[in-house]
Length: 55
View (cartoon, one colour):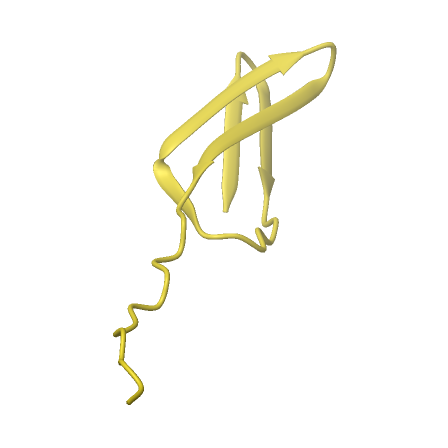
């Protein structure tokens, strides 16, 4: 959910985000009628592998 309020203007919307993000990193700005949200991406852990020697 996205909610924003500035003075008497209120905005609420649900927007799907197709990436894993750190919701605590959210930064918002509102300029010229445009609400911009910026999040830090959470990188997926790479699968851990094991080196196996072939004889």
